[in-house]
Amino acid sequence: MNLENRAETREVSGVRITRARAKTLGSSTGILQSSRPSFKQEQKRGILANAKRAALDENKTSAAGAAGFEHKRRAVLKEVTNILCDNVHVNHVRAAKSQNAKHIKKAPAKKSKEVVLDENVKVPMFQKDVKAELAKELSKIRVGESLKLTDLSKQINEGTVNQSLSPSLVNVGDLHPIVETSENPDECIGTSKEDMDCEKPGGASCTGIVDIDSKLKDPQACIPYANDIFKNVRILELDRRPSTNYMETLQQDITPNMRGILIDWLVEVSEEYKLAADTLYLTVNLIDRFLSQNYIEKQRLQLLGVTCMLIASKYEEICAPRVEEFCFITDNTYTKEEVLKMESRVLNLLHFQFSVPTVKPFLRRFIQAAQVSYTESSIELEFLANYLAELTLIEYSFLKFLPSLTAASSIFLARWTLNPSDHPWNPTLEHYTNYKASELKTTVLALEDLQRNTSGCSLNAIREKYRQRKFKFVATLTPKDPVGSLFKD
Image 1 (cartoon, rainbow, N blue to C red):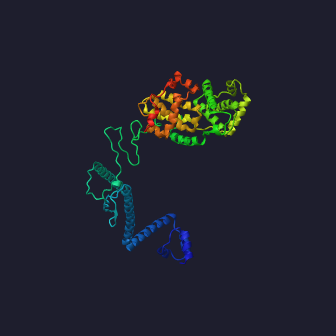
Image 2 (cartoon, one colour):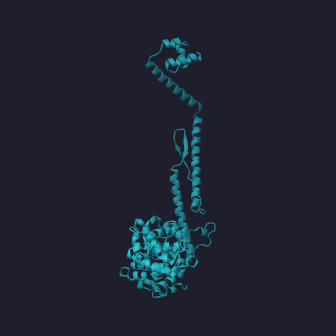
Image 3 (cartoon, rainbow, N blue to C red):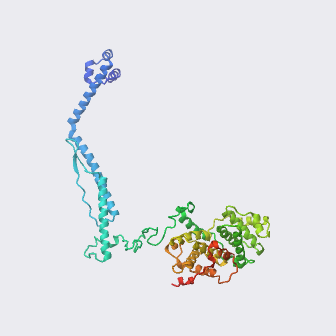
């Protein structure tokens, strides 16, 4: 039968035609067309044909290569097993290196067992899961190694180490430093090379530094960002500070004493209108920055003062006083138009940069660090530190000190004034202020002179303010002993 007739025969019958069936039915297409079987017969013939074909294929497979098929299956599984073994070996070596396993002998690999899959096929496999075995071995290595290192370090510290040990087995440099403990659990004797902090119940560490933000619940404190904020503020205080010698280089009509009189008067104005301390500090900052860049006559110095307080009030206060009130406080020496004109001049000269670090934000942070050494918060310490810091506003000579340095020195002198039996500086204050006690010497000594008023200054607005009962009369306090005795060493 030719190929065309075979194709026609398959299309007509819909059933695969074998050679035997074709011989039975005949070679002509007419016979197939005329004797076309019914649907049930075709379905039955198809099932029989498939059964015969499956039996024929099975016979061929079993007769041709049972041994070869078994060999292929064994080879594939064998390769997979080898890959797993190699990976286990590599991971084991890497884990051993990461645990300082220079001196640890390799654990012998476990023998694999043969698992019978069929009657004729045996495939080598691990008895247990590879990952579970590896985890168990690593845990044994870690425990054993830590015990060995601890015993050796104790022997070395006690001086009883066996000198006959081989250097290849004991390398003192590879041992982790051990933190010794005393009978008192709150006392730490030694620390590791990495300065690992061991936490104390009060939040303190071995170095004595206490986390001052851990117990704060005020959302406005920005606890997660507090350290980053003050790092940025420490940079800004260098960038936006006034000149320290503008009286000598630029101003010819005003003197440091005139500046002091102006600020002393502004303190009284802030008390009259109940302005915040931040407003007063920002007012002084704006005055000094303006005078650092622009010449002014002494007749207009008071106008500059009230204008800067107006700007600071708008920036800091919720309800700032009106322009008319500042004109009234000057006994109408200046008109509203003059104040607004000076306001525009100051704003444009300073490029609207009012987010500047003054002493006040540093003082808040450092008082918080100073309070951790007390069982209860000391209101007297807070008032005294604020009093000493505000005394520096009047003094032109304190412009040479950074705001953070002035704030830290105020805390130092306040603590010494209240408790001269204890050293006013500790690791927590040193950590949060970034100043050592020796670095505060010049500022603290100058601040003590202001506190004792050794120069006999007649400007008493700040002193009168802090002599009130609501401020615990802190302006009347002075140190019993000179603070200079702390810096002799």
